[in-house]
Image (cartoon, rainbow, N blue to C red; front, side, top):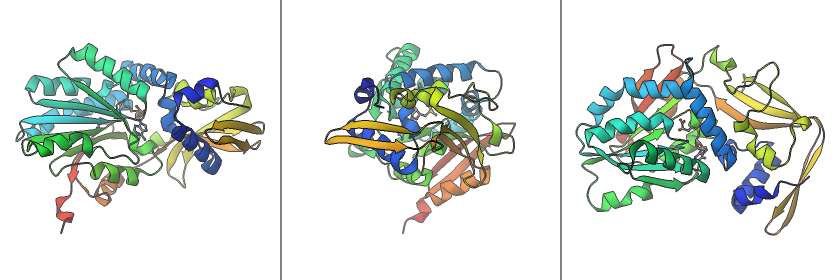
Length: 337
Ligand SMILES: C[S@@+](CC[C@H](N)C(=O)[O-])C[C@H]1O[C@@H](n2cnc3c(N)ncnc32)[C@H](O)[C@@H]1O
């Protein structure tokens, strides 16, 4: 079988090589590539559905934790004249709408930088920011892969112009995205190496509990699971029809992660067209392919991960049901000598 022609338009050569290598070596489709092209619209639709739900979810809890902690965040930014917001993995920007609105009303909002691996997500976020705030917020979108690309260079001007003393950068990493990445500690190091001394990292995520280990809110039943559109885009681009696999979702006690994977009902050979030739990937009947995971962490584990990553957690705020967390951390300057 061969991927859809559109596959070669959506992804760059290096992204295709990454998809091929990860499929070959790890039997995994990197989650991030499902946010491209139509995948960005699938996420946008899903995020709006989450926002409209009354039951707790990562979208409405992230928003309410940001609201509930606004007073505290105001205290932290009080000494600064200007606040830049750097939104990593911006999605459709929905969780930050009122947060940005508050900063705008305070007169302190400086730059708003949106960083995302998906050009489609950046386009949707830009349209949203324009429609919510007219031209009052200048959207600066950058396509980067946060697992290995630093963003400090986007802020270099401010250092050169000596604005850094009166400016603070708030780095947002919302929606539990860190927990979807293969090596969260490596990504935290990239973020730490992009931050300035006074800057703060704000992350939201779902916490581990017996209940959340079995929680999937992707509009699909765990007893008769199918792949939700937000997890299927790459498979669709590869022309792998849903009749060719069985979907499994669950909690892996050894890896301490929730996961979604598929088991192939038939053997498949996928022929990829690369710049210097054809690459054939053979998948056997019964092989499983990992499509999504989330590393389950308790609050002490999140705190520990931040400390090991060179951060000092200054604030950990949980939702009343203790299932969602907003963490605020600075770089731990005591580690320098
Ligand atoms: C779970 S969504 C969260 C979106 C938004 N922050 C929210 O809370 O609704 C993850 C977002 O991160 C982006 N993303 C995933 N992996 C990434 C990576 N390695 N580098 C940059 N962005 C990434 C996706 O394209 C998507 O927009």
